Length: 513
Image (cartoon, rainbow, N blue to C red; front, side, top):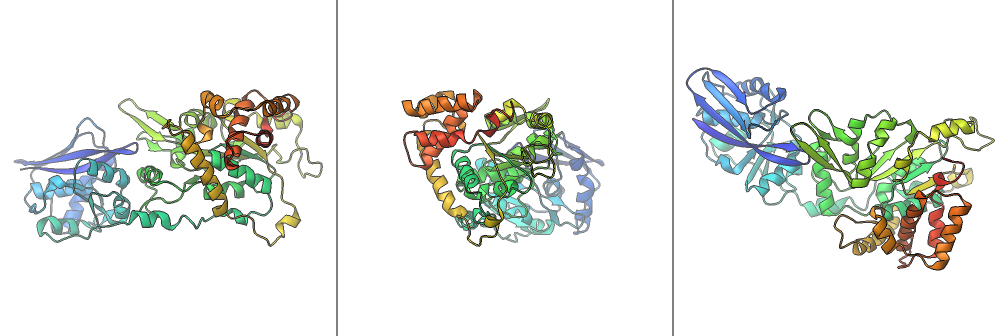
């Protein structure tokens, strides 16, 4: 007897439907074909134990299981339930009271028949809906995530027994329903980290607001304990709320990486990723034998924070150059290529010298100019060229630390940032690939960052007097455009240029030369 059951494989952030064909014939043997990996090849032991512990068995016949398309590599243990149901129906141990052609079935089996969670439930549900499937049966831990997708009934189950009763006896299963709008907007007004917690540092908060408004990458330079990490962690709280499209896209990436099980459902806040400086280049950009998204993709639509930037290996930092420019990363293997989105804001922090202090006569540790130059030269010019804002962070004095008055709340700052972003959306409405000022190229800068004679003269004098590099020119124009948007000004004025010039610390003579 031949039976077909349907599962799904995830490649990149998209899924491909897999047809599991089970054929039972005279003879003895268990043959699993269709390029399965070791985890799938070992499934017969898990399936045999799970069936036996629930009153069923794999009969002593010749069973051939083909996972089509046969030339596509399959990996992981999520096909256990798919294969088990195919075997039970093909060997006549179950009646097919519900048509298998309408169902996607996925789940990893424990030896007692209970189900373990799987990865990629959201992209699987999206693909199943596209291809006309009506039902999706999967482990209960993944049900809320898959139920985000409208137009397909999602059934979360605890064990294979529930699935057997559904097909054999017609016992109904409880459908998982998620009110996506209620879930999406519930947590927007209560950020975990708030700018009101930060004492002093008003100029740095202003700088972070500008970075958020224009999507600019930013680097914070300052001694230990000056608040660089504290400020960086609060940046997501002032970014515009995720749109529903962005939330779904972000959730898909985290679903593929198996990182949505704790929260369940849709991601409502922008991701904040802070990898340790010992990270490898593959872990940062993604890859491996079976490619998985890296930290830059997990930070998609959010913030990637690299603390102590010069401590990262140079090879790790250099692999970010292309994703920062193209906002996606492509991983190629001999048989296939996957592309992960990676549109993130880079926030980096660093000490100004190996000892942590710069030109401070009272500092406990000082460094020579040669040591400082060697330390700062670990960051390449091409990488710095992709960072729009450089700002020096100074320690907060005791008077500010001891103040009881709270600073401006993140919700208030976010309203100003959101207004500026909406102006940019209108400005770039004809270009679908461009959403905010940081993405502007030379052509857009010449169009949208025109200066009057006085502002142009101010910028010229500043570049000559402060010995700013040529790469600083376009960056200053982009940042000044964002400052003008925050002021709701159509034209870039002298004060906007003046403020933007302050945010190019590392281009000045005495830092990187």
